[in-house]
Length: 171
Image 1 (cartoon, rainbow, N blue to C red):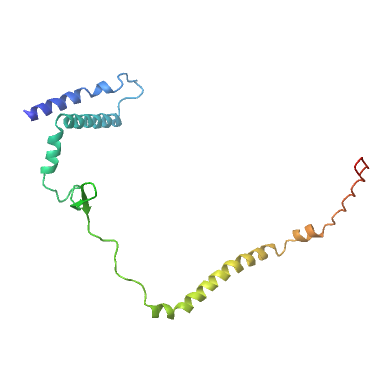
Image 2: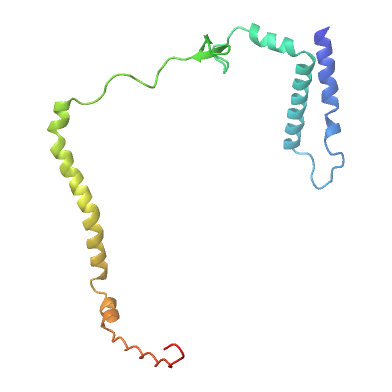
């Protein structure tokens, strides 16, 4: 009975999908495969929504009663544990810890101290090089440029003297 009802419902939905599409088609743009795909997807979406509205509990029960498939995307990857919180109990997914490790991977103090001089020298070379190399590059670029001599070699005109102030009432 339920199967016959579902088949009838799906057939009714499939036949009524053209009611949602524009009816007038121009002769310039004939129907394409893209339009067919849209019609199929919209029909499938409508059938899914309708079946879930009519029998919501049955759809949930069917999902939970199925055994897990091993080669599908619905594998259970976490264990659910019930924890007690302040206000209520809640479920929590517990997964195995694969990324973080609590093992100590630091070098020993003796090994660090023995290589300290090497890294100090390397750091000093990098810091000095970061200041010296740009300065040397700048002076290399401007060694033949005489614009600074031209600028500083110009004779600066003497400023005009201030005009004599008139004597007023308060001066």
